[in-house]
Amino acid sequence: MQPNLDIELVICTHNNAAQLTLVLEAIAQQQVSDSTQWGVLVVNNNCTDGTADLVEQAIAAGKISLLHMVQETTQGLTPARLCGVTQTTAPWIAYVDDDCVLQPDWVEAVRFATQHPEAGAFGGRVMLTWETPPSPFVLRYGYSFAEQDHGMQIQERDCLVGAGMVVNRKALDACGWTKRQLMHDRIGKKLISGGDVELALRIRGAGYPLWYTPTCELKHLIPPRRTSLT
Image 1: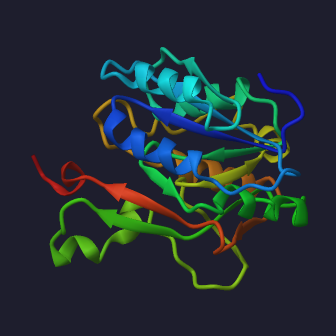
Image 2: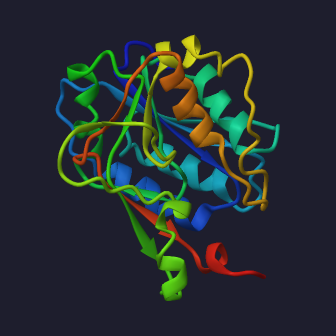
């Protein structure tokens, strides 16, 4: 655990080393002021594809602020996210998926939290990046791939996508999610979902507003397997 941090990025990952490499490279290039205290935690959810070696190499390189890794043996995105809560101490937790490439000013942009301490959670623009161009039919359902673009105005929202969602630890505790989670979300190769919606709605239901801020922009990498029926 890293004390006295403003925010910690939590990356939950399972056998996605190829994309995680791009995610960590983008984090290493973050342009952050000295006044912002931040760290990065990788939650290794039973990876067998070289993820551990990749993260250890990134730690040794020393280009990412306070990068460390923990193991979560219960398979699934929900237990991995919960592990990210228990293994961090910062008042704000940013869930950066292992397929999310942050813009260079993303970490600095999350200082939005200091201007809106009452917020339960916030998120920014999530732009889809397709490894292989999908069919026009798929493009009609960008929200199913966590696309999020509500324009260039800061605004309150009824819900947020999980990719890049920044959560207020107090709100997370107040809504009861840390004690009981209702949605399993991704488990191994099973593309079930809903855990991010649960997080957002439970926080909002506990009386904390959800915000959208366009300056927190990231690219969500979508591999061909996400749009295939096989």
